[in-house]
Image (cartoon, rainbow, N blue to C red):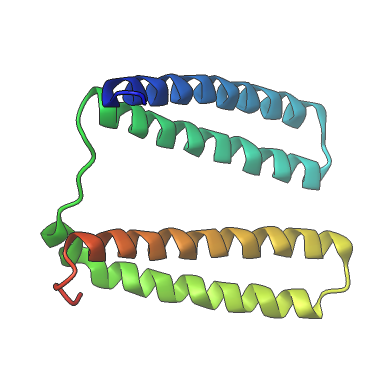
Length: 145
């Protein structure tokens, strides 16, 4: 069984390798964007490129968590703005409903493709907020906020 130090070193190594892949993805999508005027290909490549940029930031935060300073979440800090997070979550749920309605009404494969992307992304946002709420409740389960 690997010791904790080995597990952490392996995690950091994996994140660095993954970042190199994300860097290659950013470079590749940028090259594709330069070679096309097709609006849908251009848009999809921009989406993928921006996702790769965000993935790289998340990976760096994981690395920094182990190498610099552990990530912490303070229940009191979360409580100070959690009402706004809940409001935003309600907005996300409304966008999900709108996307579902639009998909039902659309007959265009291209429009459906784009709407499906939007729906998937809005659901991802909703899940991110739900998971953060679980972390918050796990830290401070009796808070009731």
